Amino acid sequence: RAIKEGGSIIKKQDKLDLGRGLLKSSFTGPDHLQNITESRSVQLRKVAFNHTNEHLQKRKVRQALAHLIDWNSIIANQEPQAAAVPKQTGMGKRMAKQWLGDELYGKMADYPITADPEGATKYLNEAGYSKQGGEWVDPDGKTVSFNMLSINWGAFTKGARTVNSQMNQFGFDMNFEGVSGGVYYKRARNQMDYDLTFFFHNNFLNHPISYF
Image (cartoon, rainbow, N blue to C red; front, side, top):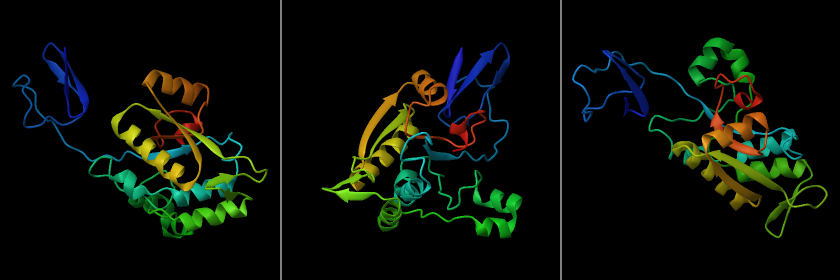
């Protein structure tokens, strides 16, 4: 049988039980089960851009969204230990400085942790976009629309919905889709059928969604 505890599944096979996640004080399983060790790990999450999208192909549009997103509001609905990183290195700050060195780390772009709508507007204007009647339009005058694809996993859904709401309030035409894990992986990995998504960063998948 399987025992779920600490967000993980502990599989019981005869006398061997092994799983990840901490057994809580309220756990009522077999007496011989115990926490063997505790270790700290880092899991990175991000807003992933599909670079095949006509708007997201443009660096200034991606920079605009990086300024628009308010990470504090996203952190508020993630795990209690969650924190934002100002530089996009694929690593936490301490690890990035260790492996990149202070000089290279210092040269990398800083993005705001709190929303900077003025900065977002600046980059969009530089890319030829403008706001008309409360909605953003591209250089050809067409409404800018994005599809936010979300996997139906608690904190990931909350993160995706938060970003979707922020972008909608800023004036983008947003469509939100929450789908099951199987559908998500088929569309996100196999078909690249999304514009934006909230997902793991560097999730050991040999696929662009893991890194961009």
